[in-house]
Length: 127
Image (cartoon, rainbow, N blue to C red; front, side, top):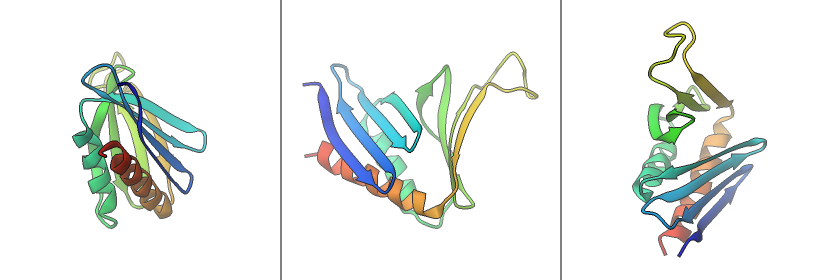
């Protein structure tokens, strides 16, 4: 049955995991004016993101979360910043003007709040 499977909220972050009528899951991540929705193949993708976020001191570079806008949605965590970036491997502009969309979150507290929201959503979805 399609619908909300899990919801997690911590600080300014909100994460929804939805069951769909297909083999995929819906994932929505919100923070302030930022919202990203995408389809993920299985909950292991979300578990992997949570596991990396939970490692408080380690950097994460270019973890693929899914496909969006014809490119790959990547999560990077470095120097206390969380970056959601959609990058296309090849674009008409080549190296100088890559097809790119990027949103940065700079506070270290954002990382622990996002990890907590994902964990809550996963716990509800896995019941």
